[in-house]
Image 1: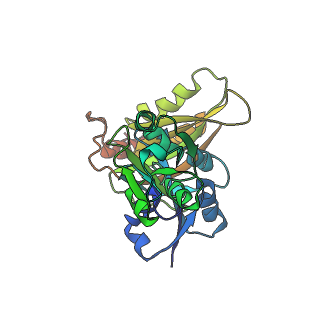
Image 2: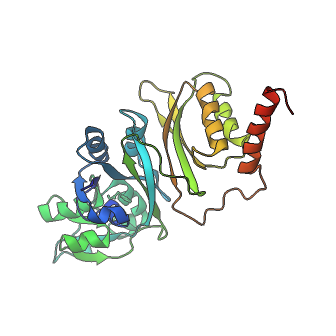
Image 3: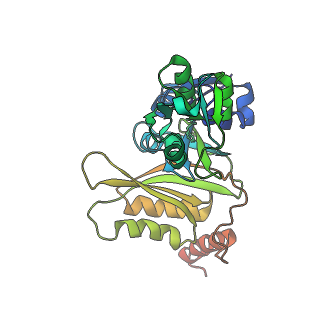
Length: 307
Ligand SMILES: O=C(O)C(=O)Cc1ccccc1
């Protein structure tokens, strides 16, 4: 039986996202307290895969996930899951808004509800917990008065619902990734994402432009670029890139070879089906995959003395 680690405990958004994956239905689910622990479960073989949050449409990246992918033994992204997230405020039965002195949630939960919390519980201390469901469990433990979490967490821990839809942006979506130990990527679908980390040469003028050019000249649409500090000293960054396409696509393979030539190091993080099928790409007429194959065949002919 497959073992899937995830950011737990039961009742997190990550668990909801995991339950949307058909293969997880027959798997053993292993709740982990933090993202690094979930990733480490995969690295050590305790789990076959781990589902962790990568980014949110309102709050941006989940830093421990980016850092866990950029360093340590290589992991690969095998799938992405998008989940709309809605937050409610829960407390112990009998509590009311006026009695709330402390509110806990995952950093992204607090950030996404900051405006509502400031208006409705202005004097409450905001406490960071490892996940929204841990925040709900913490109300039961007596660690704090209230939690901002998913409705499923409030129900699971038998809490009282003090307010619904407390997020400042009701349309927030979180992107989760399923990571495994290095393995051949899932088959190309024609609507795929390729993710990688580019370690550029520091203090080289145009180093980042060189990276972007490898994509632009091949008409590969970049869908995310994000820097993270390298941690060794101030001013050193690595760049997370997502682009349209699969490593089996000629243009993406060529771009990766180009990056390998111009970067200090490149960490391939995977090619996997894009979850939002309505993603449009850049919409321009561009050289087709056939054009790339035709150009490669032409080069071979010319090299052999033909035309
Ligand atoms: O804490 C959770 O429930 C998670 O799965 C992480 C998270 C937190 C806030 C928004 C989306 C995901």
